[in-house]
Length: 542
Ligand SMILES: O=C([O-])CC(=O)C(=O)O
Ligand SMILES: [Mg+2]
Image (cartoon, rainbow, N blue to C red; front, side, top):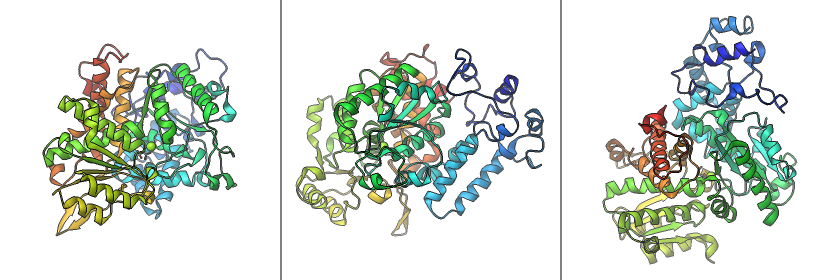
């Protein structure tokens, strides 16, 4: 068995060293040693051949097994005679996928592929990122979470519920991978703009981690999706006979804090100080607190607060290259003061203070936030009133309410500024203005709506932390990441009216983001992977 494994790992026919899907050739993850010092585990690392190999999603290649491999791995007779290339397999899958009418059917098909043939899944995703991103990720992943119970087939991550209190470390040890580098965790209370989906939020960490691999090059086995289940306040789910989570209302207060604390410490204990913990889709009241509480003891990152902020500010900086002027020349109005709105506002204030050498208290004065929960009137009325009163030149939508940027709002803005900058960010499509848009033709000119997609930053940002062995996240790293992103917008992109680079270049962009982040890690003395690489961009790309 051992020799079969070696051949699979090191033999050129299986692990094509040049493939950007296969990852590195060196086993830095120590999987080959996984069973050496632990004779009894809750799981066994076995190496497949024959029919088991055909069922192992990590090594399975289907018809792409060569004649030599069919001999070496006891596959004779188990496959039809044709040897197909991965390229042909990809072509067939894409063709099949396009036959489905509904995005959710496509989602199910592509996630099934991941369970069958991991390499092909990632290859397909990398090569067709613009087409497939909206499936694996927002907006379709939102619908998948809403219907998670009925489409649930097999666990794709770790479920830590109140039942696991006192046993969280044990649960982590049951996960069959030991060399984890990135954990994405949600408690399902604020899934995209869809609200409390309880345990069904699992689709989010699963989808985002797939992007860590496809877009950021982090090895799949090093990624761990986690859902913390403390109950749900979603009455529909509590009544749904197929619901897969705890059937109780959400626990709050000490009990909540204790479970989270046990989890945070167990992760660090089990995977080390350098494991990145990304918080995703927690409700406002927990998200800010958790980030502040664990920011000093763990390597934590909240994509909804920090990642969104970096992506949006990158877009603003790129837009200013066209519009002229600097951040300090503008008045900002945010519609929605949740994690995204406040996160972006704070980062803008920080960047402005850096540019203008002013205090953050001073630079915050040009930034206004409107939130539905802070007013008695209808949100839309409030927005228009606010626009008239404050005359913002930059308007950013970050509320869970769609269709708020009415014609009247836009016309009001154009009455006092020629080219207002307006970013509609809320997602997914059912709740928003801000998901992927079709091309727009106006006066026989075609406009390409871009998308301020979080995927521009978080995979590269996380990669930068991972490759430098960072111990803590620092705001300077966010600024470094967004500057890298803004610098990737080409003159041709600007020509088309775009303020973000095309997503098809995302792996190159991620490497640039990662390198900029890693440089700051080294500069601040937070990096543990020493010596510092000579060429960090090349290192990130490798
Ligand atoms: O889909 C995204 O990346 C934006 C996001 O995290 C959210 O809305 O919660
Ligand atoms: Mg999120």
